[in-house]
Image 1 (cartoon, helix red, strand yellow):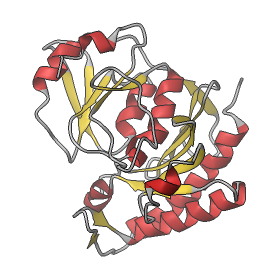
Image 2 (cartoon, rainbow, N blue to C red; image 1 turned 90 degrees about the horizontal axis):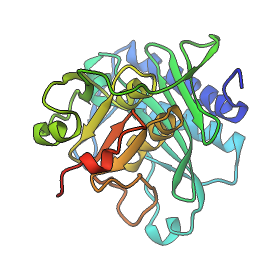
Image 3 (cartoon, helix red, strand yellow; image 1 turned 120 degrees about the horizontal axis):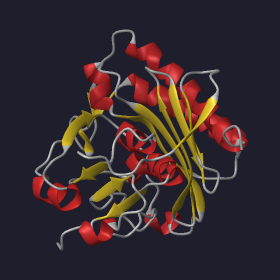
Amino acid sequence: MSTAPAFARQVGEIARAAGDAILEVYHGDFAVQTKDDASPLTAADLAAQRVIMAGLAALDPVLPVLSEEAKALPWSERRHWSRYWLVDPLDGTREFIKRNGEFTVNIALIDDRRSALGVVLAPVTGELYVAERGQGAWLQAEAGAPWQRIHTRALAHPPLVAGSRSHGGVQGERLQSLVGSDYQLVPLGSSLKFCLIARGAADVYLRLGLTSEWDTAAAQCVLEEAGGAVLDLAGRPFRYNRGESLLNPEFVAVGDGTIDWAARLPAP
């Protein structure tokens, strides 16, 4: 295949339209609200949400959508979903507010609890990552640019560890178990950390602390199709729509598929 799959490219265009709506707000003055969980919300989150909901409805009006900026439906209804969209219209709102460019649009298609399609857009740079199960992972550097197939790399020496820009945590001992004591840490916002590993520019991302399902699903598909994996700290692959809670377990995202990462995870 010389270009990204057609369906993934269609969803990518929806993400680009959402990115345009985000940038309109980003380049002007905007207010910041606080949601019930104390996380920030801007007009850009809501503008992107509207664009994505309209785009996905036009693409497939049957599939339900679960999104950070829409009220979560009760588990009694979601438990029956086998196929649905999982969306974060603006991942990295804190980075958006700081105007450092490290935020993304994330759209995933969940099929039988697995991430079957993933689209991640970095609106400021224009980089668009797409992946579809069994079809590989792809990068378009900017709108209209050719598609490039991307792959993870063998573990570098010293390894490059992608870390959260706004959610630091004590993780040194666990990182040493995974990659040894000689590693370089690169802080980066949003789901871009997964994409850095997927394109062979980093090796590991360890996340200790809370994330939600929409934070990881799209980038997980990109990383898996590039040759990597996202594992919980028991070494099990990530799954979605697991129950009432939409919070993820703590996890590690890795690039080198030849390593038994589960064996390197310390016992809880």
